[in-house]
Image (tube, rainbow, N blue to C red):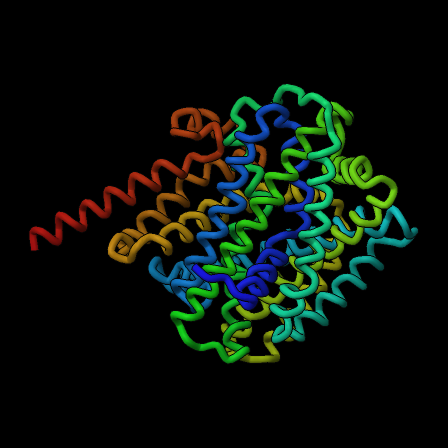
Length: 426
């Protein structure tokens, strides 16, 4: 498998759209709490934040349509509602979170300005990039992403070679599951179905219409992005574990990230971290707003006006929601993730599996069962844990917020067996 310059540009562009606020803040604290079990936590985190998103890109390469194609085998109506939910969640939670993190970590430590000013300037710049979407792949892949990658890699390498402290025991009883669920907060699986579409449209705008060539390019760029995420995530989780005796147990995500950068790069670490945070958050916001605007443009008969209006609304929402602090946005995101993430994971997996195993009846059955069995997890996340506790206790993996997993696998096997039997009888 050959990787040329175009593959790396597209791969780094994908990496930058994936790698945002949560991707930067979540791994160090996860490693900090994981302690000596950091490697097990990394496995769980990589499953939900690298492997599943990479499969999402493979699914896009296979379909090469819009996000509506991900759920079209369930029904056109379901597909539309699902896509609408994903885009609404994306522009109201992870996109504004990028502005909130940028203010807290890159602006506030140096300048006495309000979060209103930060968010307004930030999303004005996002809007400029989104309105010049034909240049997005080149700008992100050639310039911004390599800077992000090099700065993070510097922090990881310096920590690795300079830290001698012993690693404390883990706080987690089920480290792999804890890592898996924390990976939800990166929004990377949702990001895969959103930004994968951005890559496809960007290739089409550049005149690349050959299906097989585009398929190979998209898959290879997904592999490049996946390797980048794997290196950064595992390195930052390990960093958090290395420093888990150096900080107070109540330390926040942003404080830990700042502390690690200071210990590795000294006083200049703050400056590097500010640049890193700003770039990482910005590229993700650009990807999310562009993806949402592309979706609405497609809904309204390829209307450029719909694209412009959606981009403006996405940026205005970013300014408004960006006034909340990072911890609050992460907390608010949990119920939404408990609903949309299982469905997204299942849709990604079903679109990757060979078509002979994913007939429309199989698609519908698996998705419906996933929705039904993810309801208890959703109810638990909104404060009704005591009410649904008896149900979750009797469901396999229920206590790990994965009650939907085994039923989805079983119905997939049952439906395929049933259709095979039916075919033999005919």
